[in-house]
Image 1 (cartoon, rainbow, N blue to C red):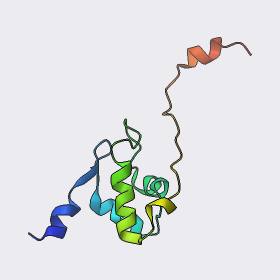
Image 2: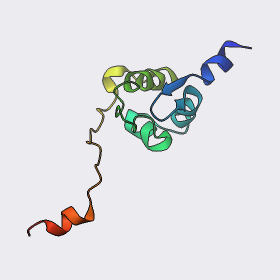
Image 3: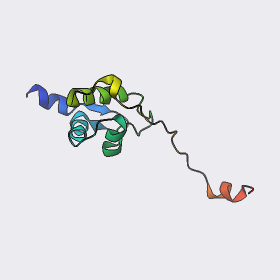
Image 4: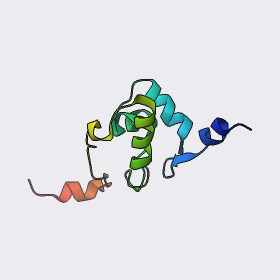
Length: 94
């Protein structure tokens, strides 16, 4: 088995089980930021919100595109949503 095949199967985003191959494919489709890779692959949308995979994904973007690390756009941070019971909303005062 060649080295490239071995790395294709590596899971980069453990929360969403996104592989290196999927991330590289997204980058080759034009993704040049963590957020755009996230939109295509859902990497970084799990419980850790990208804390464990962001640097790995940005390293792959740098490798694939040649963009300097300092030129990568900052990520947009959004807190995860939490479900609210309809009863709670009903009781809210307006």
